[in-house]
Length: 285
Image 1 (spheres, rainbow, N blue to C red):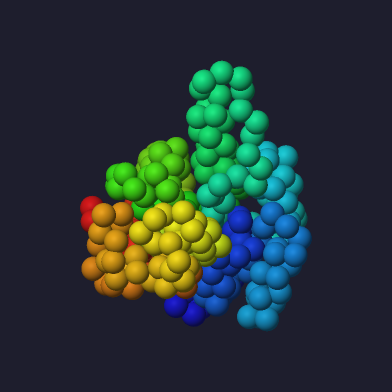
Image 2: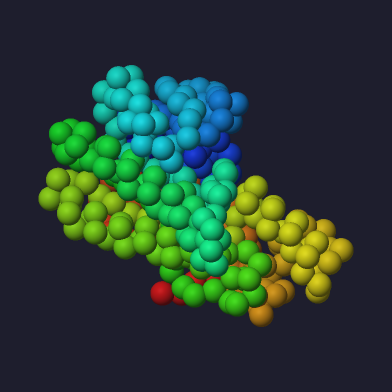
């Protein structure tokens, strides 16, 4: 899809590694200039350098994009450099950098977990979107992509909920998909398309951590190699834990990046309000 986004400006949050970095690479290769955000300066600059090597213009903006003041500064910096933002990719998610201290009482820990998941997986996407909507309306349109998850589109096994994905995470990702539908309805008349991408099982730092935890703490997997254990998910080796994946292969950051490029290109001009599952067929809607 080289050239599909020639001259467009994209802003991608949490783009220092993994899926975010893969999305940036795909957007740049498709012709977009990119505003790169990541929590740390080193990861932000690493992704920005990749964009330069591809031959596109880039703005590196490190900072905690879960905080409203940082979001506003990021948007201001993007508009100062490029004058517009055509594509917004809200990729920030997963677990928070720092766990909040629970309040006293029996509900303190669970309340802290849900607050943390909301603050990391839903609130930043809402605030960044709200910060950029006025500019997109002013410039005559735009594209917004939220990163959802298979956890937000179907119930998971009790074993997966126990060891890998707390219910709060799935609830927030389900809210992202619903928010996508709402925004598409509200801003379609302004030529703003809004979609979500729901990745399947992608080998990132998060899944490395999950795999290491599995082979260390789950009795039937103890002693296995973490990477080999992960590969068994797509093969269908653990049906009691993970739904079968018909394509029998894991997903990649390139898969997710290509999906984002498609949804933000003119090839998808009539697609809005959708959550695209990029999961090898694991979740069937």
